[in-house]
Image 1 (cartoon, one colour):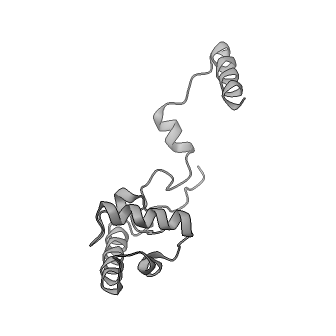
Image 2 (cartoon, one colour):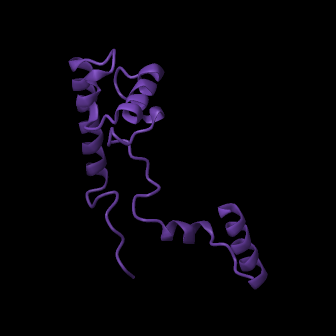
Length: 120
């Protein structure tokens, strides 16, 4: 039903000659930070981004993603100690890597990478 409604709306816009927004207009409508990959929040990182953390390979990245989904693990690396193969040393290394990423991001953009856009 939703597909049909979307199709009908698109057909009506095409009949009226309404052009689809270009990429620049589309990006301007997006909330600030919506398109940025979040590589500093471990609770939102994808398995691909998790693999960039110390001592996290493909199997552990999938185990973390699965545990977050099935067990509702939140709170970052400290909550990951419940996952086999992740201990206190791994958690310390991951925490240090995340802190260095945050510091690097802050140094490169002191205003904030997802600061709210100002009204024109």
